[in-house]
Structure formats: structure tokens, C-alpha cells
Length: 204
Image 1 (cartoon, rainbow, N blue to C red):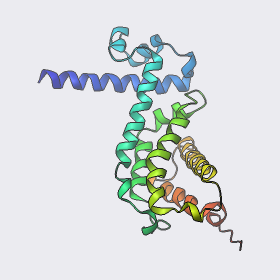
Image 2 (image 1 turned 45 degrees about the horizontal axis):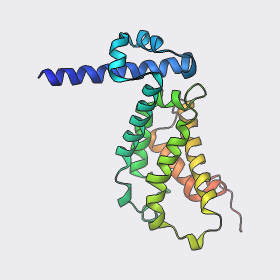
Image 3 (image 1 turned 180 degrees about the horizontal axis):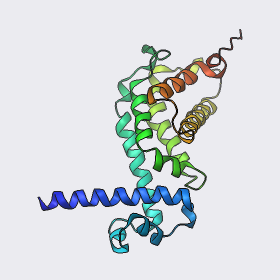
């Protein structure tokens, strides 16, 4: 019983620190905040902070790793999905809906870290995760390099940058669309391309 109580207290403390991190990034920027700022905002003492983190950089890295891990947990079944056998133009992929639901639930911390006052390297970490865990798993099943009209390298970067751009814009605009709606928008643009998505049809 005592261990359960300690675990709950640890979870609660980390949530308060994570919340303080997001608030301070928005208020002061990560580079300008201190451990003292964090402990005051979270209403904990410095000793409690140092039980869990070495410094503010360790905190940021661990929070980012937790986010990546949580995203992975939401998408760990994608290997069993064949996107070409699903009516993705009329229904969003279930795993993408779950992904956007996660982004919405954790929008405050994710938006702050991805923002101009957060960590510029976090965007690269998310891109790397998407490439490794989403794109690479689907590539062997759904795509043939022999049929490609463009370099795989540039195609991947185009999709990664476009997808993350949509995610960031959705968060910045306070998530006006539901997770289902934004997931469908993203998959339509990814599969149809920019011209067809806008209703522009041209014979190539």
C-alpha cells in the first residue's frame, strides 16, 4: 500500500513539473527559465525536483522521450495495417485518430516544446520517429521504388515536413477541427497530393 502511495505521489509530482515546464516555456522560453522557476511554478522544493531530474535539460529530454514513447504506444499496431486496402479518402485511419486524440490531450506541453520558445530539435525527433515507425513500416508493403517518379529521399522529407506542418498549425489554431476531421484532412493530402486535395485536376 505504501509503494502505491509513493508511486501516485511521484506521478502527481511529475505532472506538476511537466505542467510548469509548459507554462514557463510559453512565458519565458526554455533558455531563460531556471530550476528555481520550475520549482516555484510547480510548488515543490528543489530537493524534490532533483530526485527526478539532474537539471532543466534532463527534464526536457525526459519529457520529450516520454511524448515519443506515448506516441509509439498509440501507433504500435500500424505494422498490421495496409493503407491501400482501407477507404482512407472517406474515413480517417483509426491509428491517426488516436494519434490526434493524444496530441489534443497533451496539446499544452507539445505545442510549447514545438513552439519558437521551446526546443528546435524536438521537431527533428518527431520526424525521425514518424519516418522509422510509420513510413518505413508501410513502405515495403505499399510502395515499389521501381514505380517512383521522384527520389525517395525527397519524397520522405516532403511528407514528413507537410505532416508535421499540419500538426503544428492545428495545435497553434487551438484544434478547431476534431481529431477525426484533422486525421482525414491529413491522410487525404498525403495520398492525393496538394493539387487533387484542392480539387485541381490536371492531366499529366
